[in-house]
Image 1: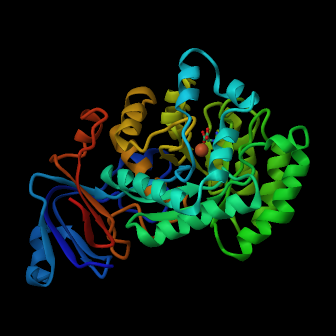
Image 2 (image 1 turned 120 degrees about the vertical axis):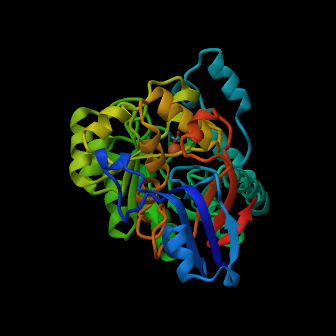
Length: 415
Ligand code: NIG
Ligand code: FE
């Protein structure tokens, strides 16, 4: 459904105006209109400006009208990196991490991602659909209007396709839009231990062509990490994916500095994600090639790892996006307020930079900066209204959602 709405009298209309990723200093300018209004027709933004001017041109009688006096109005948040479709949970593993076991140790002894793989293989389509729907509801409550979702808990053809098909159905059912990513090489399944190259061959020969033919994903991703997949294996897989027409993402330099950031620049990836250990040279190359750095502070927090060097990256003119990484292992949260808190309090990002990172740069991280991520004429009418007069309340109300209303495609979907 697409709606017709006028939002008027917004104390701060935070437009984040722009149609491509904002790099470095550009991230600080939110392009705010005070006493602003937005007109949405058939789900698309038709006009943006001062309330007085807008109401001269558009008749309120023809629209549903929302009065946003004393409120801040922003573009819907774009959560550009998640693994939200999965079976089972790993609460036990979380408690082991609290007692001192590391994420990679747990993975090495057969826990971690592969334990979610077992549960996801066993889960029915309906079960995955139902839990996915619940998680999308939770995201909507936090003001997310578009989410990226990855497969990667199948590691076999059947389950990888099942995850992508579940996301497809969720996309058609729930107001939140879903950008789908095929993450077949997410971990080494037990039966391929020591034969990682053969597993990459299997993904390239048996799974990639099916995902491509059935158009089940827009992006391909890989977990490039010590004791998972090497830079060489990642390069081989991603190059093939590119040949099939997929856009590229990489889980890069998360625990160990392997050169994933450099690889993302070499291959022209849309984004490189995590980057806790990214080298200065990798960051420089990413900035030069316009690769978006998607930072996931919830994961660093949850794994007690050092945060990615957001301040340095922005100062080096990178485009930084922020996302939750929502998944059952390294970061089990849909919470956008948590991400704001960590980015501003622990990664030295300004509030303005964090907002850019969760709107227009999040959109750029999924190659949708031309259609979402800002309040601009011609873009989707995906908008949130805060219960407070300024965007500055977002991180200030620590860990609590300040989102009062969510409008998706011009329809009020959360109130
Ligand atoms: O982005 N690092 C690899 N993949 C995910 C974690 C997935 C999991 O633990 O289930 C991540 O952190
Ligand atoms: Fe991830």
